[in-house]
Amino acid sequence: MTGTVPDSLIPYDEIVQEALRAVVGRVLNSVAQTGGLPGAHHFYITFKTHAPGVDIPQRLIDRFPDEMTIVLQHRYWDLKVDDERFSVGLSFNQVPSTLNIPFAAITGFHDPAVNFELRFQASDVAEESELPEEAENDAASSAVVTAPEDGSNVVSVDFKRKK
Image 1 (cartoon, rainbow, N blue to C red):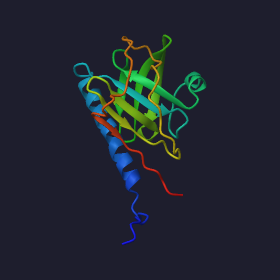
Image 2: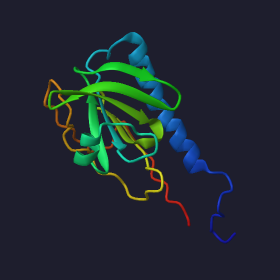
Image 3: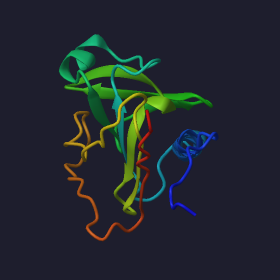
Image 4: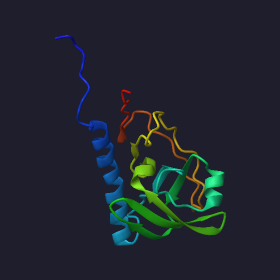
């Protein structure tokens, strides 16, 4: 044996990314069906603002030309989820907005109530995303997100594609 691993003809990295994004969809769908977040759960969702299918107001794209983090906690409305995307109403600087975000555009999902976090690679981007800055939508609390130092309950998928 030479010790080298052959290139896979099966796109495992894409399959895993898609499956983990389905976790986000399932969680959001559960919240949409029950009409609210259970207990202290709340979500920080980071996404690429220019990803295909993202539909957000131009003023938000101008302010966040690459990536944006939103918070689903106290002030959100009309959460709708399907197999490919979700839409939600949020207020930014007291201006109501509707955001339509495909799951493929999501680069991070964090529920600080239970230190659960998922990180995703953006399509055609090989860089690892940083922790999100404070969210820009009008959250009732001023929670600060910090990564658990021991890595508990954090799932990080970082596949490097061979070109």
